[in-house]
Amino acid sequence: VSRLRDFVPRAAVLCALVALANGVAWSLITPPFQAPDENAHYAYVQQLAERAAMPHAIYPEGLLSAREDAMLAALNTYGIIDHPAQPSLLTQVQQQLVEATARRDLDPRGDGDALTATDNPPLYYLLEAIPYGLVRSGNVLDQLAAMRALSALIGAGTVLLIYLFLMELLPGRRLAWAAGALIAAFQPLFGFMSGAVNNDDLLNLAAAGALWALARAFRRGLSPAGGALLGGFIGVGLVTKFNMIAFVPGAALAVVLLIRRAWSTERTRALCGGIWAVGLAGVPFGTYLLLNRFVWHRNAIPGGSIGAVRGTGARLFSYPQELSHIWQLFLPSLGMSRQFSYYPLWDTWFKGFFGRFGWVDFAFPGWVFYFALVVATSVCALAIVELIRRRRTLQRRWGELAVYTLVLVSLAVEIGVESYREAIISGGRFEQARYLIPMLGLYAAIAALAVRCGGRRWGSTIAAALVVLAFGHDLFAQGLTIARYYA
Amino acid sequence: MRKRFDSRATVTASLLLLMLLGVSLVILSGHLPKEVIGGTGRSWLGSTSTLAERFALGKSNLVRHWAAPAVVVLMLLSGGLALGTILRERP
Image 1 (cartoon, rainbow over the protein chains, first blue to last red):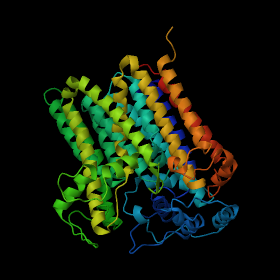
Image 2 (image 1 turned 180 degrees about the vertical axis):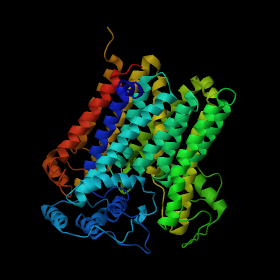
Image 3 (image 1 turned 120 degrees about the horizontal axis):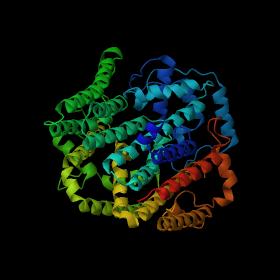
Image 4 (image 1 turned 180 degrees about the horizontal axis):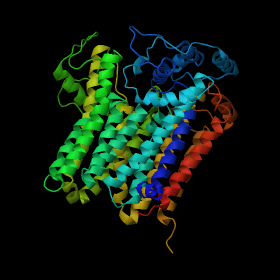
């Protein structure tokens, strides 16, 4: 126990408990199936648990189980999504219909289609099958509540790993670690997703773990244990959601740089670490791809294909346009042909990250985002001042910085590629701010740098102010959600 | 003896919490127009029981009867834990 206490500080456990309480609160606030694709993620788990089989795509679209479909109808789920003026249930008559639906002995097995979740890897859903199976009543709402509790626990694990990441990234300032982890714990979009059934939750945990493993390896050198940690987290992420592929180029660069650094002194140790990293990331993912293709007869690559796609709308696929689309999805256009009628950096990413919830169908009023912009700019300015102050250390750690930058760029490219293909295939919008939550560790690091900037004199004050602001932001987001569904 | 909490940080946190409480009370009382706060713009304080009643609808039987008070307790707990943690840490 004492060794564990040395390894995981008490403050890290407290930050994780804060995230757990917040995640459970969000799980109680958000009405059933009013989180993105929750109906599809539930259907995936139901398919695994009831048929012991992977879901498969049925065209044009298969049926969910009668049990889930009846509950979705009783809850008026599709009548609420994308209708911000339509609240959740309001009357006892509607509640009686929900209870009557729950009592009906309907088939929990559907056609095997899990809608948008069908192509996902299975790890998160296998874990969620445990609370699903533990609920003996077979009631969809009871199962969903238990599954959401597991998601909140995974969210707590994510915050614990973010604390450990900050410990390795910014050694010496305990206050900055706690402040960064708490600000991550109170990030409202993260809290909202932690209270929902979605494989993003396990992806976020794997991403936070991979960031920790990278920072640890750069600080202590690449060892077999460190390599296993890095490969393990990437492996877990890859068999959870394909987006984890964004970590692969950065992790590969890190392994090369760390082996090069250790070449004259600890070559064997570093090489063993590299082998562990490649093995633990590659074997689960390779096994999954082979099973997917030859046993489960599903698309080897989620989404279907690499390369050009055929458009059904007015737009035709082109690689230069794809490059332009990816650029403009995150950065201002530099004389390119306009890909968007709005500014994604502001409308999709900033507003989405700081205050859009549900099925992306309601948000804070406009002035809140301008206030958030002032706070975010101030925090970034403090972080930049701290980086300039520590420029010598930064120069020594350029390789590590390059790795985090590459991970961030890879994630942006990965989202951009999917966004462009969705726009070509269906004319729809793919991108959502929640796809950036795997970078929550870097968000926490910016806050932690701002706290460090205050030094011993002002550090505590900046930390206290930022944590209270983050708490307030989270509370108002919950209030907004309550107003959306229950007022 | 070392001080348990940093006094400047404690004052900052207290002031911000008071501001937070003030803004919350103004919003809850419905004194701000709908365009400013979003939602319905109605007073929440006057409709607490209706909100609590609706909050229990369409939820799992495992949670529906205690969901509303649980949210309040959980958020008080998380806020208290967070403040205690941040004020106790040395810069």
